[in-house]
Length: 358
Ligand SMILES: Nc1ncnc2c1ncn2[C@@H]1O[C@H](COP(=O)(O)OP(=O)(O)OP(=O)(O)O)[C@@H](O)[C@H]1O
Image 1: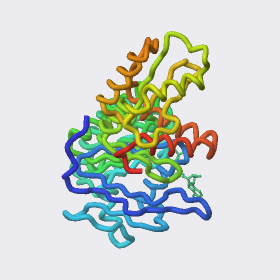
Image 2: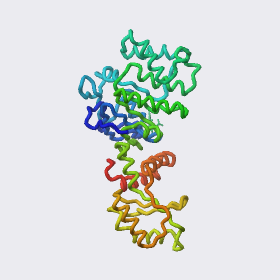
Image 3: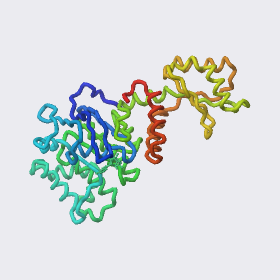
Image 4: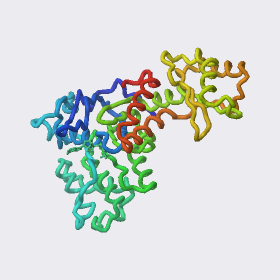
């Protein structure tokens, strides 16, 4: 899925960006480059700092520290009060739930937005129809928005970010309030815009919605970016660093002694420097989870050693996207349970993430 945009021009840059609200650090030292033509997903649970980051990009909030750069006139320019209008004209924003006057129609509202952003007047009628058609709502183009469902309003919100045909599109939680069919349509729309060469920065708390479209994913939690890479690299690592193993039956020695025994048999083959707690037992699934360094050779050596020791292994597999999902679910867990699992996430992540920047 990833496009090769690594060497493309940087269109958006967050440099050491921090935002504090009194004692609360909503965004902490965020560094992120988004290149021309990329779709970057910004993934994190509620309250992680996604909206605050995007609002700073839209100049609705000012960073407490750090700088934001946007490409304009062929070069990256620092966003300031002096150049914000011209820099932001090249971005289409959907920031939080859009508000529309109920007695206006999509045609009226979108024409107004387009003109406000300087789209040529002579072409605005056609452009409005084109973007409405993109979300299959032509039958509703002249209907008052007061009659629309939440999902329909959200679709109008998404296309209101596109109507002036900007190069960069920033969507904060575009899936809010949408049913599965509408979410699919938003995914298709994002991919279509990407095919047109647009640069897209998309936030969501939904792993699936981001992973289906993004070339790169930045995961944010408690205001910090804790992972940022192509989905392939995140998934590759996720696929290869944990073995799941099921035994014919739980040995009579009990779980603790079995783990000690397994450690003696496979300990030297994991390729991990710090092997502490690298074997876990999941009592719900009765599966042993063994962390290793992801090298297939180590995986094979572990298997051989278990076999040679006569351990009754009936299932030996490397889960798909295990760590990625695990990591993300840990975030969700944290946001519900407070600080307690933060330590586990970071420790677990640092122990396993190797080449991901923490
Ligand atoms: N104006 C504000 N004043 C005080 N605290 C704020 C303000 N805006 C955001 N916060 C806090 O900053 C943190 C980050 O919030 P933010 O809205 O950026 O997160 P988010 O990832 O977008 O979450 P959500 O998906 O729920 O919108 C939260 O703890 C939030 O309560």
